[in-house]
Image (cartoon, rainbow, N blue to C red; front, top):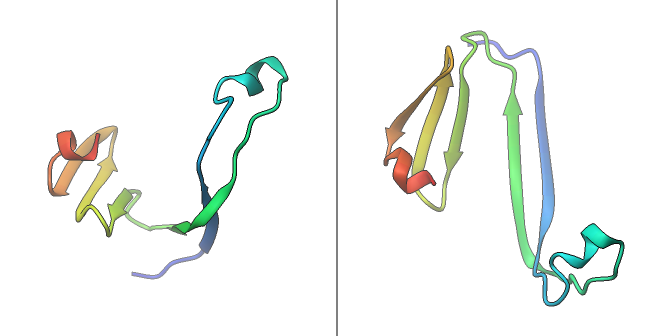
Length: 79
C-alpha cells in the first residue's frame, strides 16, 4: 500500500486540578501538564478506511462506509 501523506503529532497530558467548567465562563482554571504524552499517527489510505488503534488498551477498530468494526477487542471496551 502506498501512502501519499503521513502526519505525526504529539501533545502533553494534563490534569485539571480546579476549575474544569470555569473556562466556559471566562474564569481561570489550574491545569498543569504531566510527564505523559499522547501520540497521533495519521496516514492517507487508498482503501478509504479510518483505523483507530490503542496500543495501551490493545484495541483496534476501523470505520468503513459509515460502519464501525472491531478488529481486536470490542466496541464496548473502546467506549
